[in-house]
Amino acid sequence: MGKRTKKQGKIISTLIILIIALILGAFTQKEIPTEVAKQEDINTVIQSEVTDDLKVYFIDVGQADSILVTSKDKAMLIDAGNNEDGEDVVNFIKEKGITKLNYVIGTHPHEDHIGGLDDVINAFDIDNVLLPDITTNTKTFEDVLDAIENKHLEITTPQIGDTFTLGESNCEVKSTIIDNSNLNLATLVIRLEFGKNSFLFMGDAETENEEQTTWEQTTVLKVGHHGSNTSSSLKFLEQVKPQIAVIMVGEGNRYGHPNEETLEKLEKMNSKIYRTDENGTITITSDGNECKVETDK
Image (tube, rainbow, N blue to C red; front, side, top):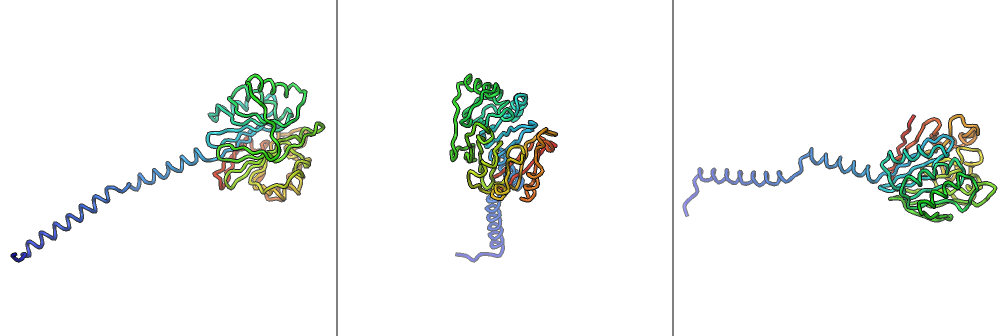
């Protein structure tokens, strides 16, 4: 075999360099461009926010309660305000693109909680209706029963400790006391857990309800009975230690709600207080780790 000349050596070296460059180029072409990768990351985040977040709407219905909860494609309504609030509550739910309610809960048969419930039941597909095991002979209550019957629905009367799920959240009935002399005590108190966050919906529950059980620390507290001094005992608040307290109350109401003593106790707990009379509708969004609060006012 003859000897390799310098010229041949240079040609071979050049060919080797070209081959290596082509190989590296081929691998480079398989990588996702930085701009595309970033956009895909953004899309993933947006998709997660849209489908996975829990939203709780404390609807401003004046001196009354109405709370809409959504988790993934599931929805729950807790109370529906006074009789005259029914249409507004229905429109609010429709504006969120909701056509079906998986759970409709009337916490107790007072007009400022179930007044608009018949309008809601008539307007949407309903899976479950939850009411406490107590009745009244008021027209408001009878209207709700008529709406339930007309839609061929059944009433579920949950007991303490009963649980159910809404999307990725877990709900538990924490209290209800049957006492015909005080309908507030019949309130179905619901505790909802979503990731590391929790919500406690007290309805019009009073201190007797609060003394019925031991309470867990809670991220968001829907303050009982519009901030009345018949609810929110110091012993209860020391157990719950809410980071956020929501008071559903009408501006200039004749009851003097919320009570100044209740506000002072919540401040002592270092709770961030929101009120529908001052803040309008209050929306709390949870990603399972943190809660974000938005208000109308």
